[in-house]
Image (cartoon, rainbow, N blue to C red; front, side, top):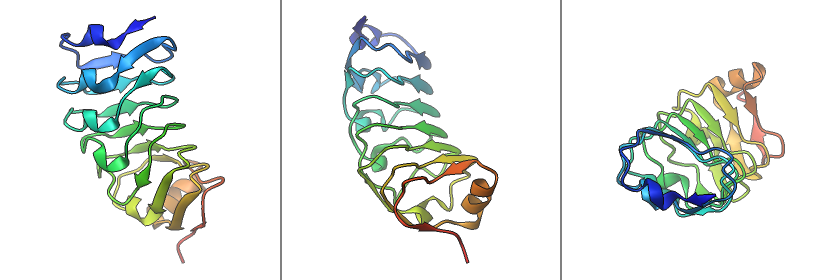
Length: 163
């Protein structure tokens, strides 16, 4: 229980509040912080727009199960590990941060676009189940991830293998 406003003046570089279900407030509190790791998974009462984190030097961002809003274009370009599963994130995946190695967008039903947008990301793990509006031909690299069991597309739009 509490409000994340109490963190406002703390010089945090890492913050793990995962499963703090009763935590309230707006993620804008992290806006001017030099934070590299932010785990707010399942903090279902937090509010805000992901664009408030755009200028943070985040490498690991986990907002899964929150009601955070926004679009992928507003993400920090430094992020390598991104979990936005079951969030209200929307928009097009056409311009993801090229630094992403681990991407989980499971059940982000409002996302759309062509999976080819991910071809230049150094992905090691990709979870896109139930992203119904995603379509396209997967790159050879993503196809290898699928074969290795490191990519999931169950319930996606029409995603095909490379020819």
